[in-house]
Length: 194
Image 1 (cartoon, helix red, strand yellow):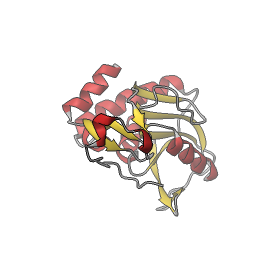
Image 2 (cartoon, rainbow, N blue to C red):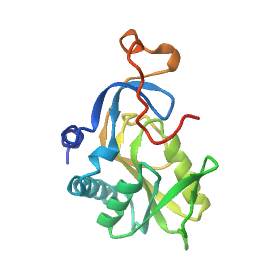
Image 3 (tube, one colour):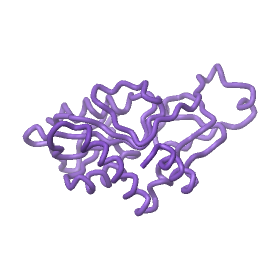
């Protein structure tokens, strides 16, 4: 699957949005990728997950024992990638602002783990997730996401495979361009601002 085919999947699902958006990072943008919409159709989610699983198989040296994804955004794609890899899928949840494994999930025996996200923008959530996986006994051997919004600039502490890299312009609250100032910002993400 080429990056353009991946972006077309987002367009076809009505998941590549234009407007004025407030991202979970606190930055403003003209563009938003709504992964919940692109993953709501199981066949589309399976196509995307299959392509990401193929990239992970090619990039990770050795076996992959399990997938761990941060909730909320990584839940569906993490599960679908795990299904494609035929390994267990677990997810992290925020407890008092920190990622943790709950619901009886355990990383026993230092399993070779890949961390799966929906979107990587700054890499902060990915770094936090990797830190939590390692704290719970996982050996992070790679990571994957549908879209790398940093266009390859984000560093997360391990290799990151993405289906597409994009570079949408973002703005601090004090440097919003004139064309966006009069448009109310929509905050479509699942995570509150810090």
